[in-house]
Amino acid sequence: MFKKIYKEIKKYDTIIIARHIGVDPDAMASQLALKQAIELTFPNKKVYAVGNGSSKFSYLGKLDKLEDWEDFLLLVLDTPDKKRIDFKDFDKAKEVIKIDHHPYIETFGDLEYIDEEASSTCEILMEMLCATKLKCNSSIARTLYCGLVSDSNRFLFDSSTPKTFALVSYYLAKYPFTLSELYREMYLRPLKEVRLEGYIAENLQVSENGVASIFLTNDTIAKFKADTASAGNMVNNFNFIEEVLVWVIVTEDIKNNNVRINIRSRGPAINKVAEKYNGGGHSMASGARVGSFEEAKELIEDLDLVTKRYIRSVEQNENNEC
Ligand SMILES: [Mn+2]
Image (cartoon, rainbow, N blue to C red; front, side, top):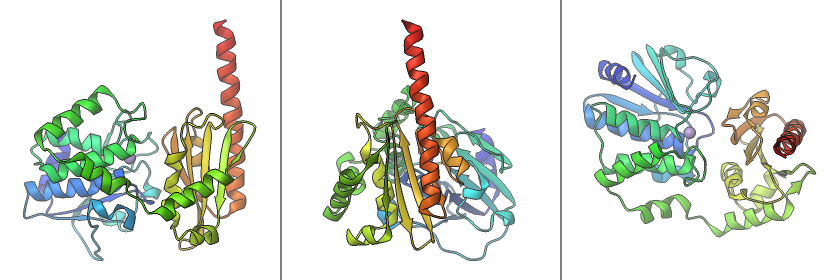
């Protein structure tokens, strides 16, 4: 399959690389790394990485702004369904290729490579660069590693397999870069964000079933001088709390006139609930966008039901073992 994808890349002079809305490091790193690898291998091709960025991830590089394009190959990375692609001219593409590691939702590409076992789209690209004539260098390896480290939450998730570590080991040896420098770029944050995190910890509501949630209005976010995206991304910092199985950060997004919901779990699968509310993601990490706080409350009630059922099934299994 990687060879087939390589052949298609070779065919086109213009290539556009897109990914999902609500950019995250794996989505953005995968598109920028693949862009660099194609440019390094084929210096005459025009390659564009598109979509709305976030200043938070500017250390990964710059996205391209362009209005008109034709006769192009569209590579869609890290996105399981068409409606979540952050690119308006999908229908103008001559050919579409999907490369993704999310649970399958629908087919929208002429060629699709999906590996649900992969920790990240960047991990899949690491494999692809090894399997094809696409070139690599330390800058590309560093960007790929960054997406992988981010999506695996620093190798905390079970998605980190022996293959993940083998690929990381191979790339670190062949294309060395300084880890501490990269982590400083990825994790250094202003005090105002730590203060907002403190506010979240202080005000988190936890249900009987262990579903924790917080609603952040635009005023609150503004008071801490943070932005919606970074407030939502703080969801990753609330893992391993004894009383909490599922946790949700709801943020008002004035700019997009909707409400952003970030969900994490260390028990029940949550992606089906996210999908019901126009969102999606992985079984333990999902997101959605809804119209109002009211709708977000409904979503949280659904999560509570799912969590209650999960607790019951775990208890039943324990009883059966006795
Ligand atoms: Mn991803």
